[in-house]
Length: 242
Image (cartoon, rainbow, N blue to C red; front, side, top):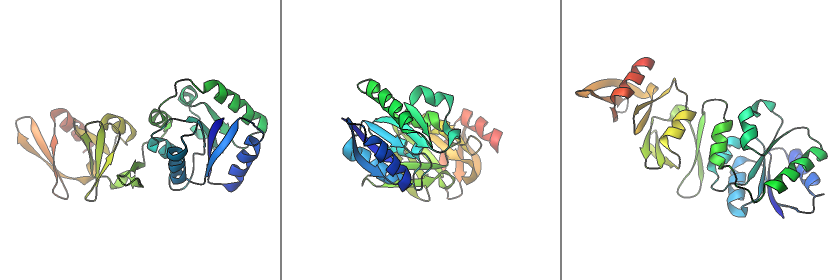
């Protein structure tokens, strides 16, 4: 059976998929979700083979859902918006169903799913990064208690490397996200966030001043008094933006 999770914030969209999939003997719908939070929970609980995922949804969008998954189902996007269908997406995602679509179109997608099952799948985090067209506007992360928190990037003070994870500092909070500093850097707006040190990315709007600390070494002092090291190359990048 192809264990399937449907994610769409519109009840009519979910109903249509449910109707079309009901004609397929080897498809089992294990969960239906009306938003991104429900989708993350459903994938963790049911470990589906297939995720039929809308993109534009409240709370969490489709890209943010993928970033939070710790499993890698086959992903098929189901959306009314064609602007997300990048050429690079065709390499990584199985398919892109543009609403309105026919039952025959969905049946063709399911044939591809059947062929794909058992093959190596693309890690969902890498897929999300490839698909993102614009700089990151929100950072979605899973907290230690299992809850999900979404932080607007405008509220981020700085980000610190922590082995294979990062610590996001915002308004006195320190939030850990399982992602490398380099990967996160590539998703952030380059005119606002700068790599000042191999271990730090800084929101330049938080800088109060930069002082010489030692020969070829400087320190960035933030408005709240936080002091962060600035490398020689980091200072060169800072000067281009300040």
